[in-house]
Image (cartoon, rainbow over all chains, first blue to last red; front, side, top):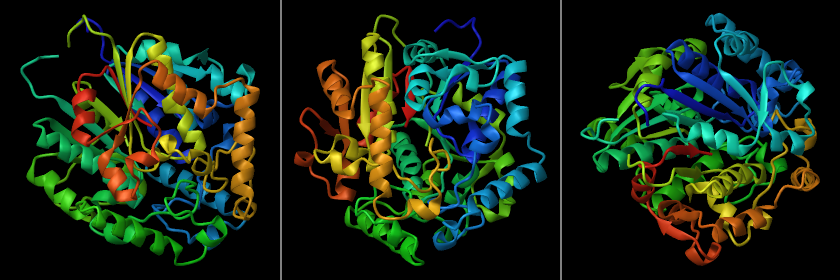
Length: 158
Length: 158
Length: 158
């Protein structure tokens, strides 16, 4: 580990819930603000975070999460409409706390050189094409992620 | 990386299911027992692990988890009462295996100097105040976690 | 950190959905293909990945996942049979993308010396015995994982 290079964080984003989209983007942008290097590798459901139609894709599931701040009984959570309600609640909390939106965070990633990498194999499996994803994203395989991560100081699957 | 300091583990606890509360606490207490340094950074739903009312908050969701050891068909899992039943089952398994409770593990964390840190931004977003959390917890931002983690030997988002 | 040893990845596999079984196995086999050392520590629901009856255990939950590529309304997802349908869909996607099956990936792990380790405490808690698990797996405690991971270059909880 050379001491003359910046500290580095390598993140895999593997989940596609709206509440799961914030943690990798917040950590990566915080890291570059501290002059670290940062990359996020988007795999499987995580690809929805960088999907052009992410507005319709990133949701908060109101069932199967016993820790929802405002608990929704499962019998109610399965009714049509509840997923949209839970998603709206989450967006409101973030706004009240003056937190950046997913779009803001993605813009910050691109502006401050967080490397955004989509997983080629996940795209093949899920039938997602490069043009379905936001501009400024690279596409690579697991080997590329491992090459980057093996010299990182922080590695997280989020 | 100086060789004269102890090995260090930095954990982010981001989930609030009862079954999701054990892994970070077990790893952190095992680490300090091996004379490592350990810190857990509680974000989003993970804050419920260190919430004073965690007994009512940490549950095991009986739906949306295809790997429940005793599988509950989803059609049954959504009935009122099943979340409490699943939570009770988990507690019984842990007891039979002579595993420490969440309360025991938190006490061990404090006694053996695992640093417990609550994420300021998550608290703002979720309307959780410092006095809602257990005594002995610090509050900090993502930058503090990154500072700590960049010199850690093991980093995990759990 | 000695420079004359191979790079190392230490993974904890803690989840038991079919879609959650692929990422740790794909990363570990990719790592050994790059001449890295790799170990996977299977805890809690992750034990189902290496369970002899994994075919009946590893499923994709069609509810509680807002990011399912073909979204299934929760009201439908809870009907009996939908879990099997979602599981079949996932297997088909993987086949179309020419991805190895879980069985193939486990065989590759054993052939190329990925260390597969089952967590003793999780086995006790869940009533899983060594003979329930695939051949070629070691059993160890959290301390063994920490010993291995503290000298790893990449550490992930997946």
